[in-house]
Length: 74
Image (cartoon, rainbow, N blue to C red):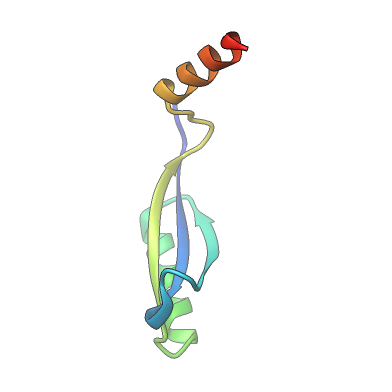
């Protein structure tokens, strides 16, 4: 069983590629979106938020296999 969390990042509207910050991690999409909306309002609408769903303790199996194989090459 995997646990999903929702990460909220705040992105400055005029500089989204270079200016952003981590707002928080939430257990459901609704809470994450609410936190993003609250922060956006607090910052006078100069930021937009992005929600990313991630799974805890999950490593991509293909990447893990590559990593393990590369350790055996040396």
